[in-house]
Length: 217
Image 1 (cartoon, rainbow, N blue to C red):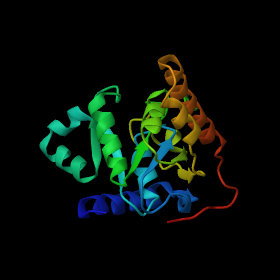
Image 2: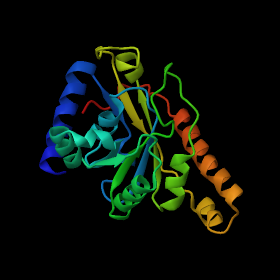
Image 3: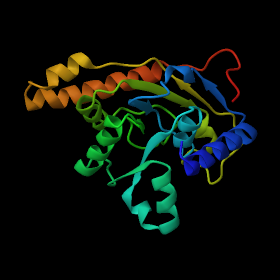
Image 4: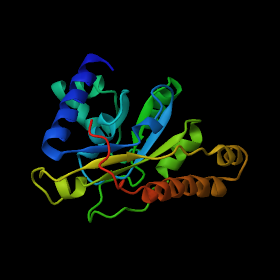
């Protein structure tokens, strides 16, 4: 971790510990080195740093490129390994930046649902993450966050001290679909992108809170 990222990492770990009494489950499933895609549900602005704070490695995030126009915020975002993307997050420039980070051995956080849930329930996955997965050769770790919607969902103006947690799943591999995507027709390719996205979302849905108290970082 670079010093700026490390400072933010320490801040969020302390914030989540003392304000939200957070729990982390199965962080050891995420490799400490090498390319990997973290795919998480999205319920709150708390989610990106929550997923990253549970891991002892630097994570690449996504943010709207308009946020980089502000000098101080842009400087912080760049030092936090944030990738600028367009509003929809599916532009060619953003995809290339994501793949470049993965090729360099980085870890990147993506949200298959595309945006925060409005009701606290898991939403259908969009095909964009399927495109990224097929274009890369990185394993995918499904991740599920708990409690963040009640703590700071769309309807909240200020974070409430509700307990939150993050759980990391077993890695998913898509070698067969990647091989098929190299030679298939364009209509089938679009189906593959959505198929991958749906499989990832199904893996996220299967992650349940642990019965024990979990790890308290």
